[in-house]
Image (cartoon, rainbow, N blue to C red; front, side):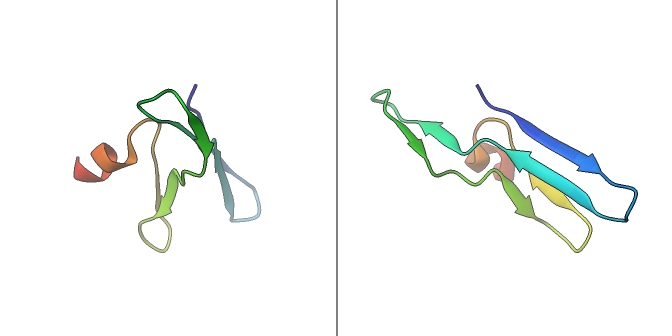
Length: 57
């Protein structure tokens, strides 16, 4: 399962959380993947699935 959640607050900030687990081709799982990336001062990109494909799009 992959999940990414972004929530604005009333204090002018926002929170973004996501899972960090990746499943490799041999079905092993590793907790290591960053799925939320800063894009600009007020913009972040979050990926549910392949980060590589997301940036390519």
